[in-house]
Structure formats: structure tokens, C-alpha cells
Length: 216
Ligand code: SAH
Image 1 (cartoon, rainbow, N blue to C red):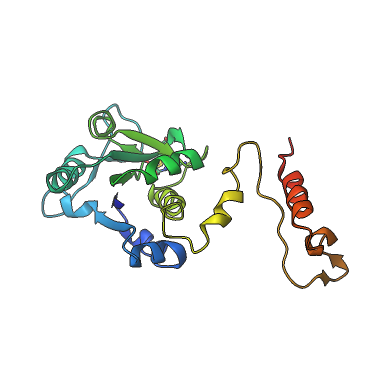
Image 2 (cartoon, rainbow, N blue to C red):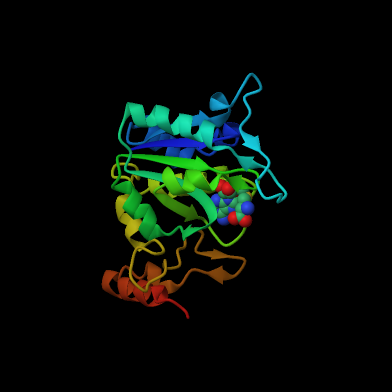
């Protein structure tokens, strides 16, 4: 899978993709991430990318031309399945949507900044608008990293033990993740539930299942 991320401050995205599971997915060639600096497509010698909003509102707006040029360049190189804009008023991101995206070959994620982006970009270049939650960040970079991280661990061949994913939150209908424990058996008088050491697999399974039933 290939993900192209368009950003005004690409430096923010250097950290999240350089470690742990995402790094592994990239090194294995399962995931390709390309980060594009929107400034490269800026206007004039000052590479301008923003401007004042029509109508006299406060804040700056990302102009359409640099975004269009960047999209145009990418569209000329390959076909894209989705062009996603990160925005607080978009569709709430979910495990289900992450799963949907893993079926895609090429996607673009556009990170907004400032007051937002020219509406014509959303109307004509974007196929999906995604929010990571009902709050306002200063830019779409961290939101895009959340989306990419949740996709990366779902891609076949990335996790060493994909079975462990089956009991994760949101993977099973109406069930949460069960509680988990490791050594030591007792710490400060706090003990691991004895059933887990009973060796009785059927009973352990039943116990874990009961513990996974969602508390309302
Ligand atoms: N004026 C906009 C917020 C702009 S915040 C509004 O009220 O909706 C600047 C950028 O940060 C946005 O364009 C978006 O790309 C990103 N952003 C902020 N909060 C986000 C969220 N919850 N989910 C996804 N992206 C977000």
C-alpha cells in the first residue's frame, strides 16, 4: 500500500513513521509513505501557500493552486483510490474505516493548517473527509499519523502475531479487549487472577470472554 501525505510542515511527520511497527511495515515493503512539502508548490519566489479569506473572517486559508499542482503531479504518476482530507468536521475515524483503507492500493492524505483550506479543494479534489475526534488541532499532521498507524498494523504480514489482533478492542462485535497480565504473579500484594494459571484452557477462555463483555 502506498500513502502520499501532503503537508505544510512535513517535519512533524518524520518521527511517527521512523519507529516500531510502521518502520517495520516500511522496511518489509508492505507500506510506502511519501511526504510532500506543499511549500514546494507555493506561488512566486516566496512560495506562498496561504492567503486571507474572502468575506473578512480572521485566520489564513490554504490556497487552491499549490494543492491542485501537488495533486496534479501525483495524479499524473498513478491512480489513487481515495483522496482524504483531515478535518475536525469530517467523518469520525474508526477501526472499521481503517480496515476499509487497508484494501486500497494508493491513497493521498491532505493535512490542513491555519483556519483551513479553500472549500473548492474539498469540493473538487477530495473523496473522503476524516476527523480523528471532536476537538480542534492546529494541523492535520498528527491526525494523519493516527490514521496511518492504525492502518499499518492491520496490513497482512506486519504484525508478528496477527492472532493477537483478534482480541483487540473493536475487532469483536460488542466485546472489548480482555484484561491481560504478566509476571510477577504477585506485586505489592496485588495478585494475577488464579484462573489464568490453572492450565484449564476452556475455563480460561470462558473467563476471558466474560471479562471482555462491554461494560455499559
Ligand atoms: N477552522 C477549522 C479548523 C482548522 S484546524 C474548523 O473549525 O473546522 C487546522 C487543520 O487541522 C484542519 O484543516 C485539519 O486538517 C486539522 N485538524 C484539526 N483538528 C482535526 C481533527 N480533529 N481531525 C482531523 N484533522 C484535524
